[in-house]
Image (cartoon, rainbow, N blue to C red; front, side, top):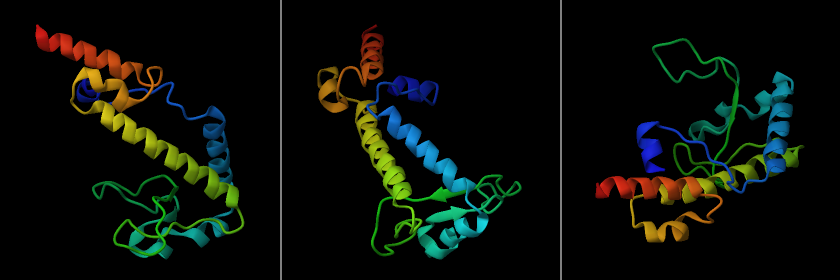
Amino acid sequence: MRLALSNAGFMYVKNHGIPQDLIDSVFHVSREFFYLPLSQKTLLHIKNSDLAFRGYTEPFGENTDPGKTKDLKECFDFGPERSVFEGPFFGPNQWPSNWPEFRELTYGYHQRMVDLAKKLRNCAQPGPVGNLFRECGTRSAFSACSTTRRRAAMLART
């Protein structure tokens, strides 16, 4: 896995354990959110969150590259739940008050992906091959990690 990320810069993860019905449900509620009238989405505008930067941003409302025009995207930013503002990027999320399913699904998916990212991070770290499955989880979920480490170990011996 480290080899793939170091050389190609990306990888495809399959058999990750995230149920397809959860993924489909999150895509569905996300589409529904962005189909809402602008007046409803702006109630959750990111400016309402001050420096926590949580909430809705309209098309052309963000510019991640000052050398170019504003970004042609709209987004809804959220992160780890915080009850109060703790500093830049760490504060309460904004959620639609009359749509608990949106919060439950999107935040539930976020948590599952954070857990997966932590497993993958551990899998990508250098270490003895013998500890691989204890670090990375089940064989089916992380077989690519196992194969990459074996190849890296064989290359190191030659």
